[in-house]
Image (cartoon, rainbow, N blue to C red):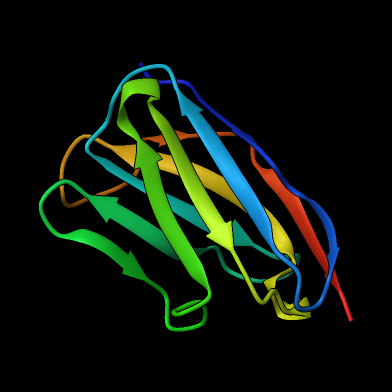
Length: 115
């Protein structure tokens, strides 16, 4: 079992920045950030794969950066140039392999961007 705990959410004006953190109880090679806004489907924002590296949704490319601090097992999401449409609950997730469902989820951290 893996526990994931997100932090770093908050309220910011459009154009601002936030950095989300996800502390993992055990190291996982395949981790990602998802987000879900009310009434919308969950979206994978960014993923970090042991072999492929980082990948991003088109909606955040060039603005968000996913990274990890391996010794501390912390996953980060640096979010710059935030837009009101980035407002959502952000979740950290992990899976045991490169494909399939993400089996491990955090409880989420809220990001609100005002115009």
